[in-house]
Image (cartoon, rainbow, N blue to C red; front, top):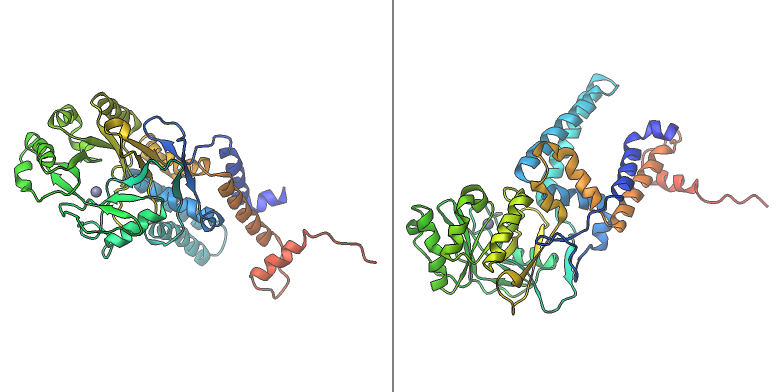
Length: 397
Ligand SMILES: [Zn+2]
């Protein structure tokens, strides 16, 4: 009872870790069928699992939609500031605590975007498929991370199990030969009349003005890409936000496929009900459906991979494998993000990650529970001595 009173947060967290295990989410789902993919698995490096509380929190923060990120930040900053200010203690301490909590949240946000760290990797047992990304950026894009070269992008992809990626900078054609650590493929992301068209292949420059007049003119780009021997995909969030009523016209104009998952904060909230409608349209017309990391050099993890069969074409050619927490972004109201994002994160933990969380909590509990002798400073020595409490004391003699 005493333990419960002194460490309510640690014990609540332990309870949540066990409770969420009763409603588990798989590490990966097929974004088309909603089932757990066969032949694809998420492999977590040892360092990732050892640091699971940090790894999982930073991943979960990466997969927030813009609206949910704002709500998450607002609620936690206010809650932690109030919690710090209203606890007992001298005014100076309370002020410091009221600032430290919100500062920690902001630092976590910065860490999510910039901190180098181990990342999970997708492995597939099917040697007939290529793990590929259809949409990613370098510093050549106006919103790309400064200094983010093609080689950095290739390394980012390789660390997560990709075997190839198209490079699709905003209105800047990519055609550098990069083969290591993975192959980078030529492409571009054309911005035309409130739509982004991801063009795949050795594309040629275009006069964007021709396609910028209206929707009809914009749709002419697909025929032009076909003339160049390239493919044109409709990107998220633009067709969702600006052209939702035009999708049949996209098909008639020759669109080769649709993004159905895109990890960019503005696109990750694409609702499941709308995804189902696009899937129906794509299946009907045998069009490609793809996932896009849309990486710009910020953040360390992708929310989606593609398993692509070079021999197949159209709807059957590609399997979109996503993190469930990313697919859920469009299904929960933004204002719930402060608790639904942690809950989705906890539900999706593997057993090794869950064990890591529990170990960290117990270590911290033991460290804090053992009274310090007078003159002792906080340090790892206290932890070592605390652990001695658990060793069997043999009777003397
Ligand atoms: Zn993009």
